[in-house]
Image (cartoon, rainbow, N blue to C red; front, side, top):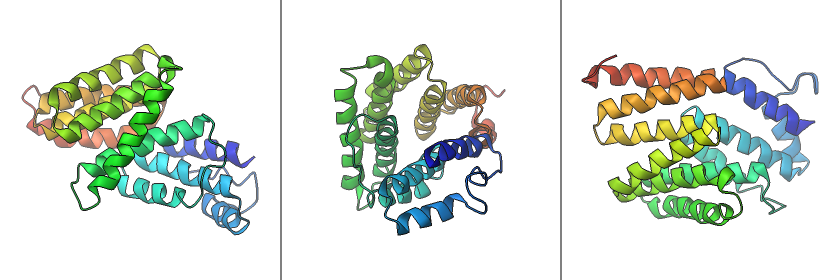
Length: 234
């Protein structure tokens, strides 16, 4: 019951609905108290699932520091089964994006974060051989972020556009929104404000279709800040 309850809570969090999905499961239980109880009982798989859920929400809502902390906490709860579980695959994808984001900070731990991104890229280069439909857009986005890190603008732009195109064609609307947002961030870093605005607007439309109102509100704030810098103001 806990995995389905967590999925429900994930949906509520992304939709911006302030509701505790754990209440029907156990009176007075919350996500935090569930984690504490499972940690005490050494229920490793549930603890990891909760950490991964919190990491995913933090990443998508723009709190990369919390996402990184959840990544570190996940390391205390190793994966027992190494098969291609959906949760594991998405976790590798998000970990790679987190790593490449922090690698761009060029801090003392840059190598650690870069290697995290590279490991994710290598995993997806293997997985894409068995299913281009499921994995190619994710690989393109990871590669785009790596080229952004390395300053390879031509490959970065090509990979961002490929990630967006493939996600759209394969009907992964949330990952299309993520790729649009990452492309916007790239162009913003390059002071190409009109291009950044275009991608932010496209990202917002994708997240609206996905129903993730919490993310839409965050993108709206980015658009409002960016608007005065654009030449083709909307």
